Image (cartoon, rainbow, N blue to C red; front, side, top):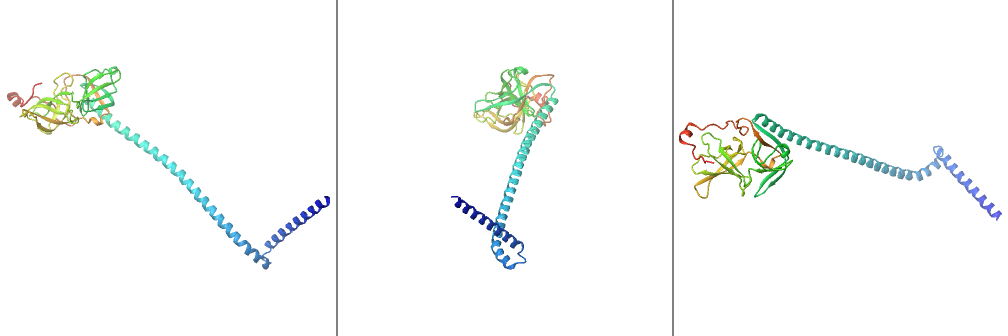
Amino acid sequence: EILTLFSFGKRSVIAAFALFLIIGVVGWAWRSHNSIPYVTSPLQTVVTPLEEGVSWIADRISSISRIIDISMKNRIEWEQLEKENAGLREKTVDYDEITAENTRLRKLLGFREVHKNLQLVAGPVISRDYGTWTNTMIIGVGENEGIKENMAVITPDGVVGFISDVFPSSARVQLLTDPRTSIGAIVQRAESRVASVVRGNGNMPTEPQFVNIAKDADILEGDNLVTSGFGTIYPKGLYVGKIVSVHSDDSDFVKYAVIQPGVDFSKLEEVFVITGTTGNGDYDKPGVAPKLVPQTQRDKVEGVKGAAAL
């Protein structure tokens, strides 16, 4: 056994020595390849394909690495741009909303400044109930702000309706377009001064009607209607709307007119509640120059043509 182990160790030493000798010879030959052409040529023939293969693989790996690196950078930049765009969109939406709100509030403040004879409480619209039989909305002011039933509700564009129910911090408004609503109105044109009632139209909620007009009454398309002041809810001179068409009633004894309200009820966001008045001042729709005027001399002699008593 000892001889066997000795023989195995001797062979290992010889093999190791031979391997080192070969490596040394190859290294020396490679370093001396310029001076020993017969050694260089075979080595070059063997090594060149290996070098080309290794070089090709290295180039592919490098290219793939660059592609991955560029893709990662592009992905990071894209995500950053997406975040920046989202932030800019959010800022744009906020800016547009603030601008719109600022425009509305400036209009309300301007209206309040011009009509100092009206005691006004501003309130936001917080919900709407537009249907066939009812047209109401809830506003965010109530008993706590001094709101009471039957107070008129307006905007700078005209009549909205009146307070029908009051709660501690909110109130229900019955709109001009509600079929249960009736508002005394008068044609603003001095030559006419026809007075009657504006009522909501259940069949066409967006088209309230100026009803019970004498057949020969002096009303025309384009005439403006303002509140007549008859009754206890609406002060005189609030803008109601404009006559857009005139029609004969089924009975053919009277006629009615379809009006376009001054208020766009689909866009209401803030309103004024009239809690009181000071003085006897009237007001009109902005941009309408003439205010309510006394009857003309002809009216005093002949009477207002077609005026309906309320």
